[in-house]
Image (cartoon, rainbow, N blue to C red; front, side, top):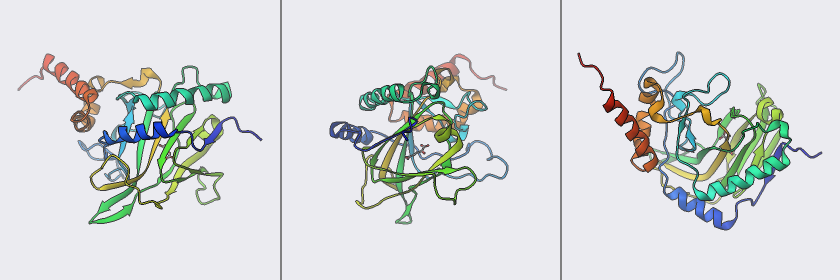
Length: 281
Ligand SMILES: O=C(O)CCC(=O)C(=O)O
């Protein structure tokens, strides 16, 4: 039976686009975020830790310390305006959106759905005391953004699985190897809500070292997951509440040192602060 809510297409990314994506990746400076705010103690019972892998976000950045976008309970002040998609990704996204609109049942595609958010995940090895420690996996989770999500993969293939909630040791409902250049799209209540997904492992057959160079890390797979966050839920850095702004200021400053977009965002906040100086004792 044809499932109109799931697509896997190997070889979706053509050679020219692949080369352009790799060239663009060279220019990136991903962040290796802390899970919780560094400005106050972690929530009760939680330990501060680094994320397993470096990431970059486009469209809007969901910093781990602010909590990820999760409607309806967490929609405000968690999706922070970020750089637009580079041309090569924007073009691929246009074709993915067309495919979703023509192929997916209309009732699983929200009215204003468009892929305006991209999480770039770097999978590979952490270099620790001169040794490589495999960090190429993602535990079971849901993507809470409304509507179908689409993902593009570059590099070594990854074993991607859909599993039933609460029964992670049971045989997966679906295992899909995501190959270099492939596209995966899933939507609808079964794939998005009822099942969780995970990346169980990533091959290391070619000893790849994909761009960009990330200190303390060797990348063998890059995944781009495209999602939809309603535009009214995307907040410029300067308009975040003060505590959230302090939580992410160091990250935005790090991004700003390589990105004109973030340099402007940081500048807007400084201009606003200069206009309303803090009272002095
Ligand atoms: O790397 C992948 O293929 C999936 C990434 C993922 O599950 C996510 O970004 O939510």
